[in-house]
Amino acid sequence: MSSTRTPQSTVDIGATNMKRVPSTSLIGRDRHALDVVVDDVTYIVTKAKTKNEKIALLKNVSCAFVHGKVHALMGASGAGKTTLLDVMTTRVTAGEVLGNGVRFGGMPATKALFKTCAAYVEQFDTLLPMLTVQETLNYWAELRARTAEETTEILARVPQIINDLDLTTCKDVIVGDALNRGISGGQAKRTNVALALVTDPDVLFLDEPTSGLDSATSLGIVQMLKNLADSGVTVIATIHSPTSEAFRLFDSLVMLKSGQVAFAGPLNTAVPYLKSLGFAYDDSFNMADFLIATVASEDLDFVQTFKNDAAGQRNVENIKSVMSTKALPPPPQPKVTRGALSKIKTLLKYRTRYNYSNPDFVAARSAGNFLFGFVMMSLFWKIGKPTGEAQDQSTQLNVASLLSMLNILPSFQASGYMPSVVLERAMFYRELDDGVYPLVSYIAYKIIEEGILAIPVSLIAQMMLFLGCGIQGSFFYFWIINYGVMSCGIALAYVCAAAASTMDEANTLLPVYNVVQLLFSGIIIRVESMPKGWAWYRHTLFVRYGWMAQMRNHFKDAPAVFFNDAGEAVDVGDFYGVSNTLTENILAVFGLWLFWIGVAYFTMKYVRHQKR
Ligand SMILES: Nc1ncnc2c1ncn2[C@@H]1O[C@H](COP(=O)(O)OP(=O)(O)OP(=O)(O)O)[C@@H](O)[C@H]1O
Ligand SMILES: [Mg+2]
Image: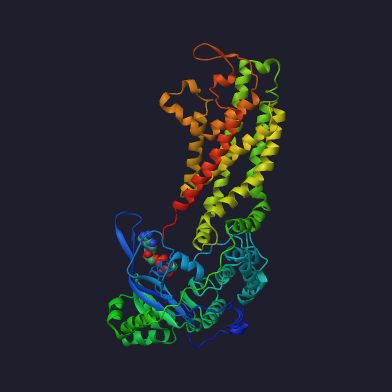
C-alpha cells in the first residue's frame, strides 16, 4: 500500500486544462432514470488452454447502481472489473452467464436495450487512425443517428462535447497510431469518452477512463462524470489509483475480489467498514490505494465477511429496494428512418475519402496490376494477332496460357484486400456491438470502396494488355471478365479474412484455394484427362469460368489444329474442354461473385474472433 499524494494536497481544477462543465451542458433531452441492477450473476468460461476446465470469472455478484450517481468499480488487477462491465453491457461472447441477470430500469439487459439507452467506453481505445478528432466525432454521430433529425441534433451537440472534454486544441489533429503520430494518449482517452457522450446515453459505462492521464486531467474527467450524473445519468466506471480529490467525487463503490463482491455501498462508508474490521486507515495515504490494497490482502476472507456483515445486509436491502421501484417504460424510440443505405453513405463519406487520400492504400491496390501488366505485355508482345503463326498450335497454347495467367492473377492479388478486414476487426466488432450499422452496410461499403478503385485500375491495366498482347475479340468483354474475376477474388479474400483469426491464417487460406482453382481451371490438366471423380469440381470455380469466357472472346474462329484423345482434329477451345457460351461464362462469374459475397456475409455474421 503506498501513496504519493496526501489528502490534504489539492489540485486546482481551474488551473487544469479541463473545464468545469456546467451540469446542464450535456443534457440533450429528458432523462430516463435507469437504475442498473446486477442480480446474483455468475459468469463461467472454459479455460483457453485446458478446453474442458471451467472457471467462474464472476461468482454470485449482486450490486445496484442507481441513476444520478457516479459509481466506482474497483479491485486489484484481474479482479474481474472489465468482465463485470462486459457482462452488464451484454458484450460477453465466450462464456455462460448464470443467475438472475442484469436489469436496466427493471428491464432485462439485452443488446437491443443497451443500444438504445447506454454507452460503453472500453479499456482499450479503438479509433480510426486517419480521422481527426472532430471527424471521429462527426463520423460516430452520423453512424449512431437513427433519423435525419437525430443526425442534425447529434451533430449540433459535437462542438459542445469537444469543448466540455477540452479537445478544442486537438480537434483537427489526426488520431494516429503506433506508426503515425497523432493525438496524445490522454486526448485519445478523452476522445473515447466523447464518443460515448455523442448519443447522450442514460447509462454510461467506462472502463478505466482515467488510466494513463495526469492527475489534473483525470480529475477533470471525473468532474465531468459527476456533472453527467447530476443530470440524471447512471455512471459506472472502473478506476485504478484515482487521486483522493477525484475519488471523493464518486458516490458509491463496488469492490471486487477474484470475481466476487468484497464491498458494495456508499463511498463514504467504505473506510469506516474496513476500520470496523480492524484495518486502520492512515489518512496520509491515498484512500483508493488503501481500499484496494487492503481488500486484495489475504488477511481476511473479505467476501464472506462482507456477506455476513451489516454492510452486506444493507447492500442486499439496497438491491431489493431498487428492484421494487416501479420500472419505467422503455425510453421512447424514434421511428428509424436511416436504413442500411444511409449508413453505407456515412461509411463511404468518412472512411473511403480518407483511404483514398492515403497513397499507400491506393498504391497497394494499383501498383501490382500495372507491374504485372507491363511484364506480361513485354513477354507476350503482340502474340495474339490473328494472322500467320498466331494460328499455329504453339502460339495458341501460349495465348491460352496468357489468358489463364491474366485470369488467375486478380484472385491472387486479392490477398491485398485481406489486411483491412483483419486489422479493422476490433473496430468492426465495436461498431457492430453498438448497433450503428447492419452488417450488410459494412460489407456493401467494403465492396463499393474496393470496387470503385478497381474499375480504373483494371481498365488501364487491361487496356495495356489488350493492345500490347494483340488480344482479339471485344475489349469490353476482355475487361468485364477481368473485373468480374477480380470482384470474386475480393469477395473470396473477405471470406478468408473473416474466417481466419490472424493475418497468417488468412494468408494461407487464400492461396491454397487459388492454387486449387488454377489446378482445376483446365489449363494445367485438361478436362479430358481429369479423373472422373474430380472433374465436377471445376464447375464451382470462378477462375475457370473467367478463363473460358476469355477463351471464347479471343478464339472466335480458331482453326482446328489440335487433336483430342480420340485423334479427331479440334480447335483450341475443344482441346481444353472449354464449354458454355461467352455470355453464360460471364454470367457464371458474376453469379459466383454474389455467392461469395453471401458467404462473406455469413462468415462475418457467425464467425466471431473475440473471446470475452
Ligand atoms: N477466457 C478466459 N479464460 C481464463 N481466464 C480469463 C479469461 N478471460 C479473463 N480471464 C481472467 O479473468 C480475470 C478478470 O479479468 P478482467 O479483465 O475482468 O480483470 P480486471 O479487473 O479488469 O483487471 P485490470 O484492472 O487489470 O483491467 C483475470 O484474472 C483474467 O486473467
Ligand atoms: Mg480491466
